[in-house]
Amino acid sequence: MTNMPLNGNWNYPTAIRFGAGRVRELGEACRQAGISKPLLVTDPSLAALPMVEDAIKAVEGAGLAVKVFSAIKGNPTLENVEAGVAAFRTGGHDGVVAFGGGSALDAGKAIAFQAGQTRRLWDFEDVGDNWTRADPAGIAPNVCVATTSGTGSDVGRAAVITDAARHVKKVIFHPRMMPSVTVADPALTVGLPPHVTAATGMDALSHNLEAYLAPFYHPFAKGVALEGMRLVKDWLPTAVRDGGNIAARSHMMAAAMAGATAFQRGLGGIHALAHPLGALYDAHHGLLNAVLMPYVVNANKGAVERDLTDLARALDLAEYSPAGVIRWILDLRAEIGIPHTLAEIGIPGDDAATVGAMAVEDPTAGGNPIQFTQDQYAALFLDAHGGRLEF
Image (cartoon, rainbow, N blue to C red; front, side):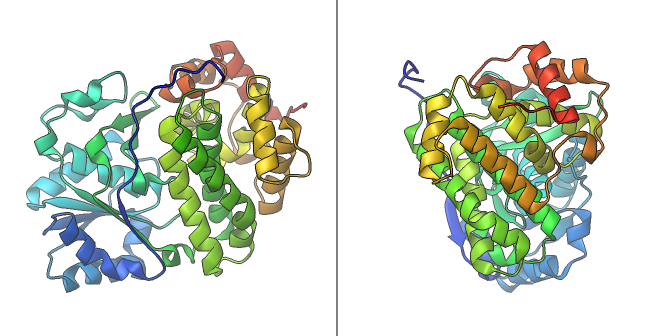
């Protein structure tokens, strides 16, 4: 880490209305973003819940017309985005309210981004300077409202969309995908069941942790990541145990946004493996990250020993060492009910070579402290599948 280049392209989040009950300000947030006729993008399960009805009333109460689009999958696909764009154009909308967990947020941002483009979505995959192909004037504004505390997509400049034909997750990036306004209302997360709270909370931890360990120079992001991890340590067990604790819910929502703010510094091997596994088996992204985390940290520890030791000290763990961090992750997972192996969550173990090949090509692999080979990723996958972990 001492020889890292001291340069980078830095960007930090947008206007955030944070606090319990602030979803009532959604109509005002739309007006602030310059939106007068929003398309509210959410997932089918949320669309039928009172919180979406309340969101609609908040928008209509500001004198705005709103329609709902909810035809998206748990891992949104190109087809979902294209259907949303068609609904956006047919309805004469001028902006998007993305409302829900990471899937709805990513789908909504992608729909707003693609609303006025002539190229297909895959032309803007986050590779090289592909984002410069987009027509900035064709990007509609979006307002994000998260109902989980995991992805932090409500303060992000990208969307993860599944190429269902090729079973690959692709990252679509553009600076103007950043929400114009984010409404962060932790009261919306109070109804989350413990297992969802646990998986999404570990997703937030994975973002902060990988950003903290990424081999790039971005001291602001590294500091944000450190505070994000402290919030997870102090508040995730409480949020899982007592879902109505609004303080715990608030701190975990902040931790999720911290992770997405920080990971412009980079992500790494946890995500490089989770993305292909999610695409191949339609598994929950946060749960995959949670299971994979200790195996990947252990594989990286030789390259980031000082950072992990500093992290253990900052979190006041029982042992100031890389092993102390790994033990904390294992203890945290056990406390909140995260399985120890991929086999326990239904992932088969017979596609190691395919997973390894996909992982090494994933854009997040470039942010790992060690540039693992295809075979090394395949071996990591098998370790996580069988529960082999020695440190």
